[in-house]
Structure formats: structure tokens, C-alpha cells
Image 1 (spheres, rainbow, N blue to C red):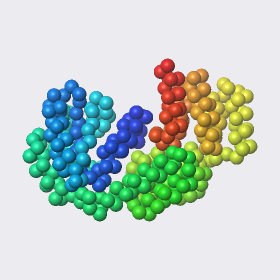
Image 2: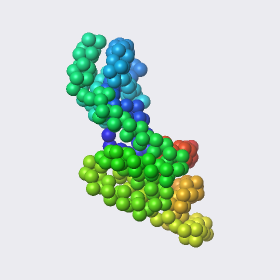
Image 3: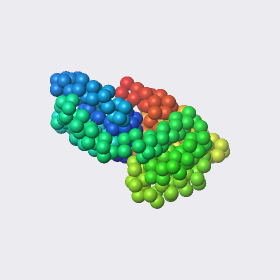
Length: 305
């Protein structure tokens, strides 16, 4: 599911979907149920889906539910026109439309056919699950600020799965955050050489992170930019240059403070450049990062009161 060009709420929705549906589907057959609280047929179908998922749990089948009122963007990506709509998902892709299978026997018949054809719980599924686990570990370590260690984890995943875009993107972001710009550039070039990886939105975000973090200033340069921004608060270009440099130097709070102050002073300046830069920083760090969550709250309070 593409995430390039999405707003923050849409990106968060995609991240939730990846964690609850896509990643489990790498080794399991996921019954994906689109439903709503007000939908009578949905409530009638739920016990059937739950029973079948329970009966087939030892065969690698699990149930995931998406409330279309709470996850409208995800529902739109699947072009859900009516509910209940039910799909079977495997390795991140819909492999069957289960919507018309409304009885326990009908569902089990379709599942039996799918399980006979797909490598559920086989070596391929286990390998993908292991890769997803290591990738998640790398993201967690990176969020904790251990960029060098995260780079090591992502590097191993790339060796295990050369076509895994998430691992390539994580490696680039980790190297960039560790200040290893040349290695990050080399990792980006290697990723771009694989067409399936090069076209993945995750790589575009990693490239954005590299652009923000590549030109890390020394202390003298940063002090000069800070002075220029502080001397003339009306010079928004100078303030933006300082914020970008502070971020590249690892001073996230200083960068956020400057950009939020700019937004407070003139949120429309240069077509909203300060807000756009802050959002770009969010993407570079990762939307689940604690600093991003806190700073997003500050931005929301500033914009919406």
C-alpha cells in the first residue's frame, strides 16, 4: 500500500495496517473483515468469522478487523463500497474475496482450498516472518537513538532479503542519523539498483531523511546559523536554514522549537515551508518515535488551538 504523498494521519493509518494485517500475513492467512458498529449484517457475521478463525488457528489462520468509520483511508484503498466486505490476505496481498462466504461451511471450504495452495507456515512464510521481526527490531532500536546498532541490524536484514524495501529504507535512515553520510549514499544507490525496491514509497522517505541529515554542520557553522536566525527574527530564510542545520546536527528539539516559532509567526510563509519542513523531519525520524509524537501534539495545538 503506497504511502508517498500522504498526510500524517493517513501515514499513521498505513502503519497501523502494516502492523496488524500486513506483517502477520507474511506467515499467516489473515481473514480481513471490514465492518462498522451500525452494520447489522456485520454483527451477524462476526461470530462466524471468529469461530472459523479459532478452529483454523493451528493451520495459520487469523482474523483482523477494520472499522470503516475509524479507518476510512484504509477502506478507500480497498475500494470498500459496502459492508461487510471480507478478504483473505497472504504476504501483504488479497488472495481471495470471502464476502459471499457467509456460513461456516462456505468459509471453511474456501480456506481449505487456499491453505492447500499457499505455503502457510512453510519455509517461505517463516523466512518472511523472521525478516519482519528483525526489521521491526531495527526500527525500535533506531527510535531509541541507537543509530549505529540499528544500521547493523538493517544491514543483516538486507543481506537476508535483498528485495525488502523496508530493510533498505531503515538502513539508509540509520546510517544518516549516525552521521555516516557516505555509507548512506552508497546504501541508497544499492537500493535504487533494484527496481522493486526503488519504486517503494519507503525508499522515498529514506531519501528524504538522507537529504535532511546529510549535510551535518560543525559547531562553528551551527553557531553562526543560530546567531543569524536570532539576530533578525524577520529573516525567515535564515531561521529555516538554522532549523535544518540543527536537525542535521541531531538537535531535534532546537529544530522543532525554531520551526514551531516560525509557524506561530507566519504559518503561510513561503507556502507553509516551515510546516512542510517539520513534517519532512517527522517522516525522516519515523512516525512512531516519541519525539515525533510529542512534537506533533505541539504542532496540532498551534494550528488548531
